[in-house]
Amino acid sequence: MPTSLGRAVTDAAPRYAKQLTSHFGRKVPVEETPEGWHRLTFEQTDVLLQPGEDHLLIRVTAPDASTLTAIQDVVGGHLERFGRRGELTVTWEQS
Image (cartoon, rainbow, N blue to C red; front, side, top):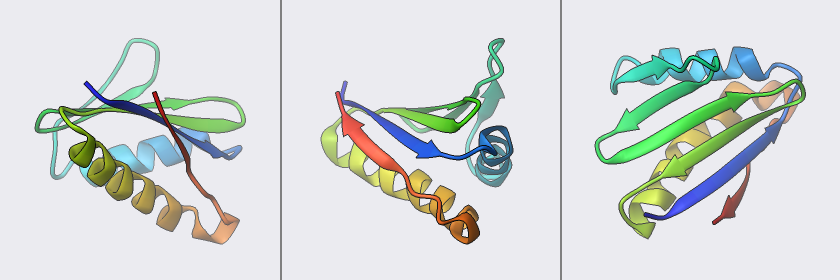
């Protein structure tokens, strides 16, 4: 399954992870992992939000490349809008 890793440099990673989880939690299943990360499930696509001290990692695993790109655009776009004031950007890397 195709996977990508997004990274947003921010000192407010836990807040942004919680904001994304709250926003999408109205539409898709969400859960908090024992490690304190957040998992969002979009049909067959898994999104894992891993807040760090100075960044937020977003790992997307999808059934195909087009779904991977679509979910990257949705999740990354929302995060960038939430962090617009701080000029937050998400950089994606395919694996």
